[in-house]
Length: 115
Image (cartoon, rainbow, N blue to C red; front, side, top):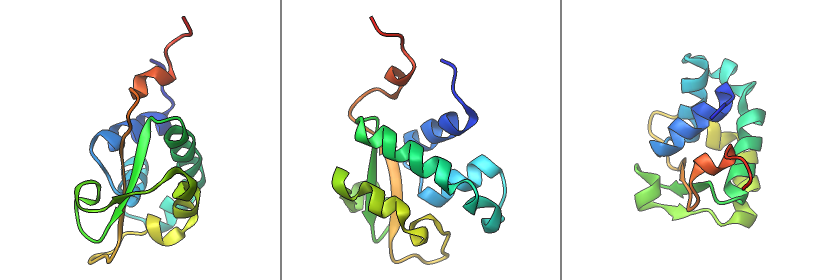
């Protein structure tokens, strides 16, 4: 499969149930949160597209791991959650965590040719 750097980063982080800020830190290989913000629109678009097609799921919870202890964000709420800048920020002691996981469809279907 021929992934863009952003797609591959998202794929890896989804398999690890990463928080949204972790995606940005991994992609930039930086702890500079100001640098992270310029990449939010790309990842917001990818997460929205992939989740609407069943390749990703989004979860929110009060503690880690959000995908096990929180609630799944229903499709109509995904864009709203992704548009909230607070969900992309690192916090030492967060009151809310937002993470992505793999969805019900194999993410590898994104690049497989039509039969």
